[in-house]
Image (cartoon, rainbow, N blue to C red):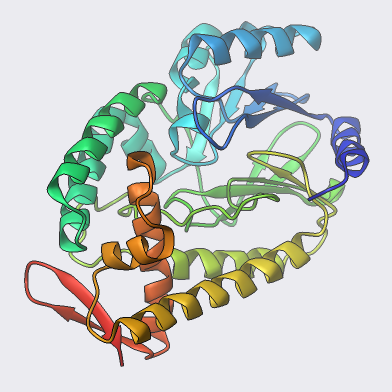
Length: 340
């Protein structure tokens, strides 16, 4: 955990570069989401916060403290598809007339948010059934997802972004990189001249970003199950190799500077958890579903956590499958895993 004084020093350095953290409330356990006001031309807000009156009210207050209004915003940048980052985009866009910049592939998904979320929920429900989650738990999760969906909203992307190119403002160029894993659309922005990286949820200091089982943006019903943890680790390795980064401005919590050490620690943690899954399968002595393994690891978790724990388990099973330590058995209805 970073020292508060060190974290404030990093925020001060970002502010000197014209990037100001505006932390907004969310209804989720992760806590506040960090949006960032970039004082440049166009006046830019990175991420929008959840679709709630409280978040909008606090955003207006934080902008006012800087002598700005929602109506002054000229560019909204969306880092990824999760509703706590996307939710207020449409309201802010309509009030300000701002352009919306996001990964090009996110445009069609965000344009019909409700249909996209419905398709993702359909996929998740089928996936949960295949991996042993009981019917009553799946139905409860579907109902919860429908409720949570209201914290998000559609967005009209007017500036599609291409990885490898730059988003050019008057006084800075932000290098665009696609870092899928936590979500299919995770996008980071590097102000190389100022050595500042806007990482959103790709890299957070105090928690490991969950590699959620989410279908690709261009195929919401893929024949092959996504392997987001493997994808996320590949993305982290790309970020680890970056240079000219002194400050990482994260989507939640405090900024960080020692990103290489944090990424190395995440890799060690993933190896350790994969080893734990392997030992559980050894001890069981017979094939287990991912839900069985989640129960062994965490017991009866809250309904809201069931899909998260499934994502965690299958992510580490994928590492074991990749390394040839376990094998998959599929009877056409249920998938189980055993030691190779």
